[in-house]
Image 1: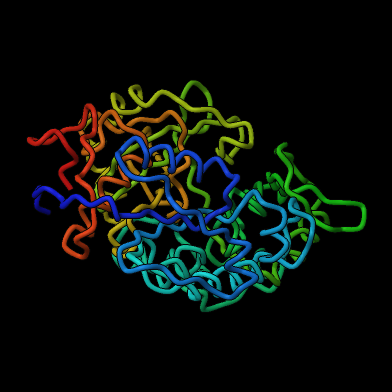
Image 2: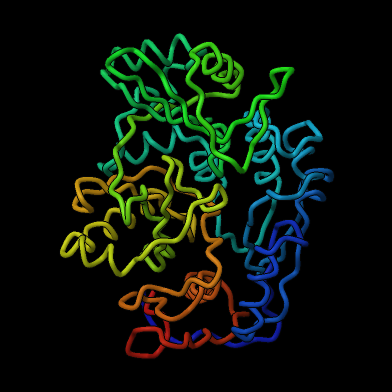
Length: 390
């Protein structure tokens, strides 16, 4: 992509479709102002869901942000007033896609058809596999054979010779409803998860990871989740760092890997909100050696499966001592990485995830609109012109 200057105009506007009180919206707005733009206009998800759509002007660049962390929006999406409930993800998926499709006009950073795939782990897995992106084996790839309950999970573990498997909600996020299930040679079972079971059987997300070893309890959880859609993946034994299980979240913006963070945990689930901790990226790069470039390339290949989406977060699973990598998930809203600056050799060196996206978006649409301000100069960024060479 050319590094030609972008035309300046005070009429340029950013729009964020999000929850206005959320830190995601606040952080992006701060980055936009720092880059020389006016404060973005915020369109609330609750208004889109209630009113059935929204119209954007031709010169507005429209960013969709996560509808999470707002009880009112969550109730509109899932049909229940309990924001920590696990159930309801299928309804959430359908209503979220309806809301996205009801948005009209503007210069869009998120493709509705691609979001439909990104928020269905079965479809996402199939798309990645078709593009020869390395992914764990999955008997549910492509959503061709629904999982009806625990008996189906057990039979597929047996048929595929998978004694260890991740059971995921097809439309889940933030590890909601995920169970890491392992079967020993003695036939004993263990399911590690953040799911907490209420006395009446309802399921809730907890910030504490727990284990279930009674098959009847595991079966009850899976059977309750199955109507929302389940995805199964072979459990890839992850590499470790300082005795903790570890993986990587790598952000890809406009086709380039820009930011990376190591996530470590004593449990199979490395999500930072579940007690995980950021690890040592420099140590990972040193151990990976010449395979580090391969890791970034794999993430860029995964992102290339979604060319209409400016930014995705790729969960990369390392194995064999940080010498082999497979893609666990691709996340549409995977850019919430506070205080993280770009990879030193990449196009966003020294800047945060939001500033990197702002620069990339301006370049994407520099020929689509004559109402864009000059591209911000990214302090510390690489490239002959001192900016981001997208």
